[in-house]
Figure 1 (cartoon, rainbow, N blue to C red):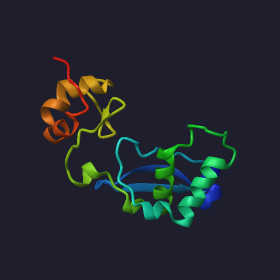
Figure 2: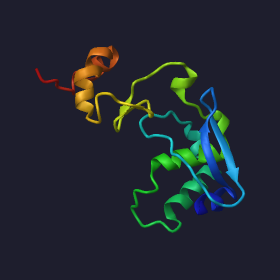
Figure 3: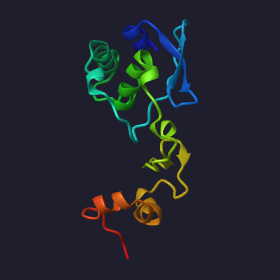
Length: 150
């Protein structure tokens, strides 16, 4: 909360999604913050936005103000999430929801950042039991580096 307040002079009480997959934000006047991060499994970003003075200012505060050197706590996920939420929530969206599709991107035991992966957290198991059979483009791209047993 303190870092958001320093950078943007306000904090966040709630972040969710609209029915169309855009970010929905309630700002807090009392300085308490609650912020769910955009999952690091897959995002497309406009780098010009993240080079803007306000986004750079937030990221400088995030990584240097009361932060131990080399801390993993303030990483790329919050660095991508906070500026988007604070400045342009309506320009951020859940691609799968917007396109009414599932991408089945596997990360940390989840698919598309939300659904629990029925194959568990092991990405190799996911690939062998599902991905390699159902994802033609991925199989062609990866067959030079992924070796399947059997």
